[in-house]
Length: 147
Image (cartoon, rainbow, N blue to C red; front, top):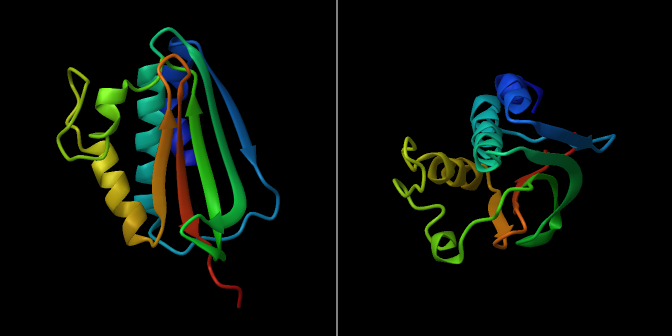
């Protein structure tokens, strides 16, 4: 998370985006490729910042929890929330489709790749958004089994 945020610090300052980060103490470890997991976080952070063209609040939290698809399996739950205008309803159903974008310079691959990475790690990525109320992306990754 720290490495992903470093990439966007100057852009956040220029766009008047305030950052609120909350990391639970005793956060479980996640087994996986750190570069791929960083790519997921970077994609989500980038999208949130780009959606808040006129500034806003970017809230990121990491906490221990359980997988929503397997309530017995411990997980690390990451949420990335923005205070942007939200994702229009007609766009939401396409959000994870490769090459789908609403940006002038986007490739439409960021969320598709993020979805693939999270799935390959045995996790789940989902979002909630309402027009005018911002967006929350949630990434659930299985916690590493204790030794």
